[in-house]
View: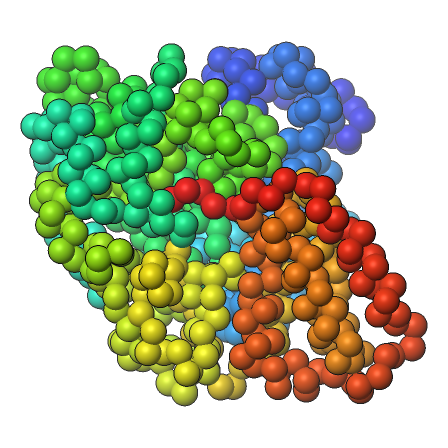
Length: 603
């Protein structure tokens, strides 16, 4: 099938059946595209045209959505699509050499399809497997962990022999929780339904009041008060209210939600159901990141079991009028969909471009109705608060940061994995527990977070000191912190949705300057250009992705300046480089004409 041919009759019939399964609902566009591609490998133009006609959309809209998400292919790709995780920790474990090895064995260039159409090999952003990398995704739905040269050689043989990925050695796809320290959320779990029963023993308003008493703040990064958010949602006028779980943890270095989804799904779905009772919702949606597609069937099984137990569906726990159910929407590879309004756009079958706010989702969210969006860890916390009370939760942690926080620890340490601590825990304590040695830096909260030097290891995790979305990446003194920042710059340039000029052009200019320094053609003037770009981008972008793009750059230049200076060729301009021209281009590209909304999911 080529891009301009008509669909074979059987394929067209299959597509029409798929569309009917989704009720020919335009809001299901992303799911229709994903499911069709899972069967046929890519999205030819005739398929897009048939989808557009059936859903009452323009071809331009459908094409634009297909082009927006990284995991959609509008050109043919290999029958085996191998995507190596390109997070900095995977690179530290040798992922780049392993990618080159596989390309050599299969005689294919990176980012291209082999002439016979058998295989394509490329990279993708963090796959949430930093604690057991290097890792790769196969055909977007199967993971391979702990890659080694021996495994790569066997993989090449299996691909050449056309062995289906599902028949590869099962231990290759083993994903361990690797919980090294558990506290409230990762400890013994209540029986399914216990949290709901405790919530139903209160009125919805009493549940909200107890949540406010707990001072629970969202675990997605921004730390917005959960009780306040839910109260605003409950009070908002609308024909329907929605509870949405943001399971799109795309921040490199973060994998705590992966563990909660895999082993604590009951606690998560319980928290969503309690939220429905509190805000008056009858429908819940989970947005599952595309990289976690392999978890879908297990999550669906948990939902079905809960329906059979009377914990979802009509009259939950025999409470007349309390009707609530949950559906799962799978993303297609877009970091910006971690922002709550971008996530809602994707749920509605659109490009995941963040909205201008206000209005906020609690008033005008999914389908224009009041919606509360919280992440996986937040909903899990709610289940325990419903059981034990807000005052109990408030006694854990600090006055401004109550409760516990789960950390995804990776990088240069003996025991990477999951650690749960009360807020207020010292950074140095976490390093001691994970077996870090000779540490020079810790990146807390992922690339958009903060980079701490050894002088700051006495600081504490908490909204009043070192806030975090959960990533904790460790770098010992053998690491070049310029290379760390360079990897992050590539990530932000790759993930920019392209909607606003300051981010689209600014992240590319930052990457261009970093590339130049890495090649050894830079000067001290290039470092100054990076400072200027940081200043120009901060506060001018449509959402917080662009505003946060220079965070690791700013921190590493300030705290690890020698790492940059070793890449400088001289103190003079190199041939062909005009600093004034670069700065003028940057200023023009990042003019202050766009909205200044930030990439915060109000979590």
